[in-house]
Image (cartoon, helix red, strand yellow):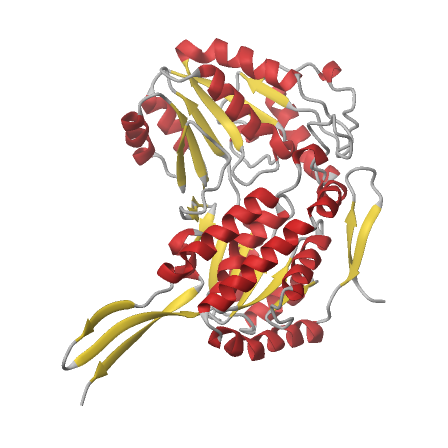
Length: 460
């Protein structure tokens, strides 16, 4: 019997999509085809590769009316938000715009005796293992610059969002990117690990859980395969005593609850200066009480189901443990009768929390946030750094110099001031501690998807 992956829709528990999994031999063949095609692709002029990627991105955009409800069925995001094409396009086109400069040789000397320079050459075959929570945007972060830099790309998407890889591959093939240069595959974890261990890929970019990243590292051990790993997060927000409390609450609570809290850089814990604490809580509660939980295919729905019931169960367990340990819930369950004990999970704000509670330490990846009162910057920094993760931190203040001083002390990949839950493609997307290693987008993203090659040419 042929193994398959199944997308169980969080909307109603039905099987929305099912695809057969490639055998080990089929996976190996796909990787071999990519390797055979890569040199020819890299030999094409940079401008031609850039133009084809731009065209592929536009073709995905032309599919958006079909993509939006597909996303709702696959992972639960409400259709009212219009999908991901805005961010998808912004990231890809920025990488296209900077490609010529980012990939240009570094000229050292060209004189009477020597020509010396460093080129950026493709890694070769890049495997992209993409997650389901922002399935288009997370994939394009690597797919676009990898193709532009001259790599062949093999995309393995999450089993929760199997149609995304198919859509992307079809779009890029339709505009002229060779089928062997950009392949969508359905691989089991075991086959993926075996291929990585066998050196089938030159670089692997993985976005997912800490456990998944550890499995990738184990698979790559001894193969010298390059890795980029974006793993877990527990991103903090800090509202300083001079902040615009209304704006801070609106943005931080949206950052905690949007996409049912299933955001890589979503806000999972908030620290508020004592003078603003009560005002912040009042605004936060009013925002959450205005949400509508329900079927994501309905325009009125602002909060859809979580992607899987087991993800919702984890958040329920963290919340219950916190309440048993003395935390207080500020949102009345009666306001969300759509909560069904399965994938549909009501949003919650917790106070009287501390760092002994899982909800303040472990990744929740759901619509719950703990809020703590702090005395000053020192206490806030100590709490923000008291974490195994470091992806982003959002600071709220009217003083940019203060934000820089505090930001310098935070163990994180990105520091935001007066915004949250955003990815700027001109900046390196990176993290520290158990959030992973490497960096995507920006000029540094190109550095990770290429390798330096030095030329020392002595003239006769």
